[in-house]
Length: 183
Length: 183
DNA sequence: CGCGCAATCGTTATATTATAACGCTTGCAG
DNA sequence: CTGCAAGCGTTATAATATAACGATTGCGCG
Image 1: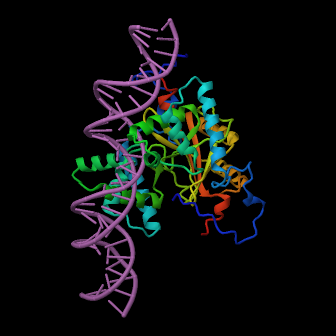
Image 2: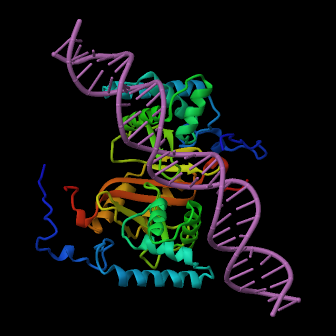
Image 3: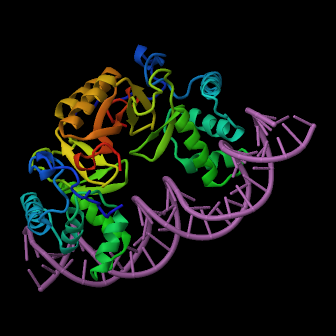
């Protein structure tokens, strides 16, 4: 599921395929090194700002998650770190993940039991989350603002006299680059 | 902190606690036998209407799920059936669950890896689902209509050029009977 | 009826995801 | 420089889910 197959540009490539930096679906195969460094840097800031410890293990785990736009499971992180010589137990991965989730620099995709790096700077507020769009073909996860939708969900819940605490909205489908699901 | 004190169950209860039949949160401890029979009957109809086979095992699994308003895990179903003398392998439970999900008579709660009986008659359409409200205290799951919310989610996705296929909306919090989270 | 096919289920084994328990190490506030 | 909480290692196990393959069963159709 990880070998993201970029279709040979058979069709004349339009603007949409040019990895609009504002799109929630940038090309996963572009300038990984530099952008990754930036992303790690931002995470470092978040930890610093909140007086949390961005330990070596947490950095390593975060780097693996942020290295792809796709969601990634805990045991895949474990395996990739292993290949690089960092052999740890599953529990250590999960502990790092918990810290990263608390810090808000990664999110959990409930429908896949997997994790992905948060690439936005706003909505890091706890209890409020953006909508997640997960591609069934390439695995990429994008985030779009869903504040008004979450508000409506809150109202719907209260209409049932339900007191909401945590809400999530996830959409599974096909990202722009994987088009309509045709292969 | 407000001490919104929930009276012990012996206290004189008001209208809200009287299990309004229209509420998505009926009292889980009421007239289980009769209502359960009705629910099973409705499931039987769904299977019949769709030309699917409501086998003995599927009936048993469905009955266990429908026996509570809370969500229930596959292995808990396994255990409860076991206590009643029906010893099967996990895979059999999962196969029955898959059939029940396909028929739309149960739903899967992604955030808990658990299942619950659908008690509504509308929204059984595939690809469209109601909003799930899951109580953190008693485990009860209620469903409320979310058609307009799902529509908005679809629009938000399309705004990101994302082609949605399946949408998940789940809310975790406290049901009316468990009030504000105070114990 | 009974043949044949597809669906269901049994059986065994294993994969995948996640946490418990306990003790050692380390960073750092005082 | 010491005491404590956070972090992490280690071992073990729990909880959730699926693969593979053969036996059985329901049932449409000749």
